[in-house]
Length: 115
Image (tube, rainbow, N blue to C red):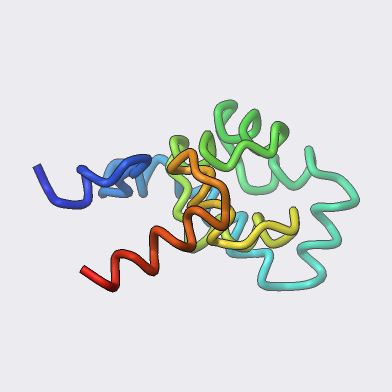
């Protein structure tokens, strides 16, 4: 068992998960472009279809459930683009993953550097 798998809330993005999450990650990568963000805002369902998201991925997106997005193969690096559309930071998402508040998660990260 790797050290990373012992971190609470960690969802491993290995090869099979990356393959599973490819449509979701490709869509989130598109959010680097303002026109893509606007197209998403105008018609989310059409945008999901454009990238051929799975039912699981669409459901996670509709619910704005970042944890479910990770479980559906999303990479935090790409999901950060979507989280930004929701006004969430990577630290906010880290808190969601670990069941901590954002401030608790930030303190946790600082404490890791003190070890």
